Length: 333
Image 1 (tube, rainbow, N blue to C red):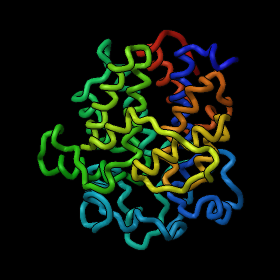
Image 2: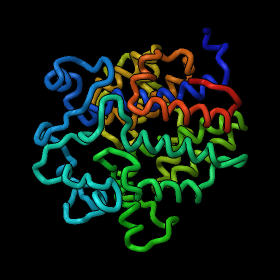
Image 3: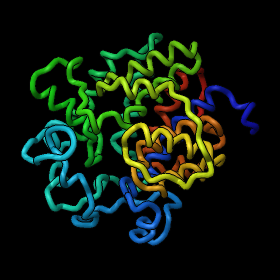
């Protein structure tokens, strides 16, 4: 099918599938800062499809999770039980000093990370939101309920913005005052995950309205005018550059996102290149997957990449419901 003949529903569905596929492909090699050379050493070859992450204690000794605060942003002590009791229930042991666990050691082959679950949460919120669609207060309540419900997701890792939000909530602050920013870890590429879904949910509406809601949706989980600015950012990209290994900070990572999107015209090539670049490839991949998936549509994504997702059936149903509610009727799986 020609790209210019794709329906809006097919493009939006393709963008959503692309988010989850990119997330799950990159998940096992998230924060491999040695790039593809490290991936080859650990797994014997570059990522070519879904694989399980390292799951054993000591298998990823360079893990920063073992140095991160379990009660707030960035690095710090492990005395707090925000991780383990308030959120990411039962996962605090993976954060133990000297544990050497990979960030997503608790996940299975083809499974989405917590940030992929944030995209699913946003989809479900927009689907059930009625004619109005996005509602900041409702989505924030749904976020708080999801994160504090045991078993709502299976990931071991939670980014700083999650830990800060629930640190504030545990201190008794109202939900609107829980989003925070430490000036270092929160202005990050994962801040574009929920806005990407909100933009897709507004694809059939005037662009300005959808953009405003997407920028507001940043505030569901964090206080970051810098991330809000990037929701509408456009920048030149040079496809001749090597595939970049970058950290989570939004400036460099957003530039690398555009570079990958410009360099690779194939959906599968782009998402595998993102995975094999290592570094902050998961959160970038969620946004890149939306861009690449929108180009080819759900109809242009290989069936095995959809079927290989750990939560394929649930994701397919959620995408269909989202399309019916926000774009048009009909199945796009």
